Image (cartoon, rainbow, N blue to C red; front, top):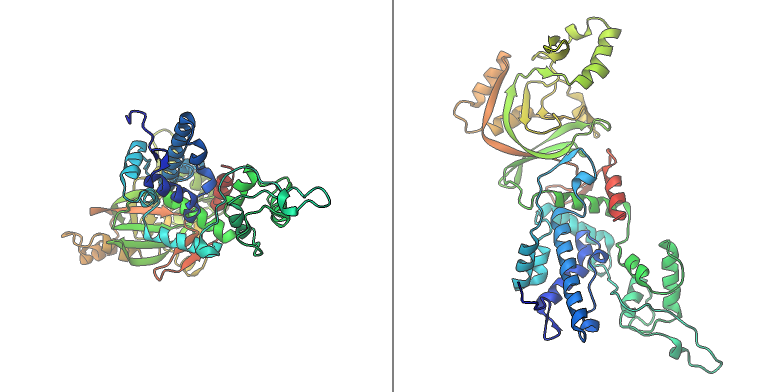
Length: 462
């Protein structure tokens, strides 16, 4: 389509777009990505050979598209991490990316736009830079190039300097390795070689003291610690979400067990929640709340009936009847349990329904004590809400039938009634172990499901 014309060079020189793309690829660590995953070819070395220049052109295009894909959709698909995740797909269009970046006045900014645009993501990115420290959080990237090796001078009178290789990358290497002496010296001297050897030992590389390709890649891999890893995996989860979130939505942070309602992209109602205990994990998903059930009965999942309720009945005959459970024939010779609506009902007074393959929902509960705990992972996977009546009145606000008085009267009657929302509300169940509070502070939570650890290991294996 370009009549074999190169994209990134003009008369053998790098275009402004190419320089912008290369700058963005080298700064990939700012967004929790690894610059080593987006190699930049040596255009200067390829300039004299048309075939080599064509190959370099293609390689930079591949790196740019890899960056855009991973920036927008993640370094891996969420299905590779857990079966308890379901988010909408939002892949890049390679042709659109190429056209957008090459036509942009600022190619670096155009490529950066494929990262999540959300304010909370950007605050995590700022926290990542703060934790990494140095150079305002900007990682020092060592460019690819010829291997560098220190060879001591031979001969009694041979000048030491003559035996040392020189390279313009060495000052950056000195800064990266913390060598303050002769900071601008381009010679790969004994001190630099020794620092490289020590780095290799700590990075499980063969300690040769030679700056080879593997050592450069390891140097360019961002440093690790627990808080940094936590931020990195949460930034990855942001990439699994759509780039545009509904301005009106409900977000549940499963790890922190907190629910927030956003209206016009601002939090207007926040409450504590109780989410799934380890082993009964609350899934990560997005859906739409389409209706609420007032005074809902509880159709007990077969797994809970078998593992928990029938054994209680066997140990204490009459347990089911005392707690308002009834046995309903299924028509195939079997039966299921249902708990009638009422003061003992596990779902309390309200249930919020949304389509999902896991059979989970938001609901009230008669058991209130758990809301006072710091750790509130205790459910079978559904989300219990601290103030569900406030939520139902907010969701039905403006409905001419379901006035606050009508809601109160229906709840008091004990009748089971389904109310359709006048406007479906987006709901996101999220697993944030690093998240931003309304005052802009980054908070950290434990990893109760082990999903952080799993994601860190999978990213490290890429």
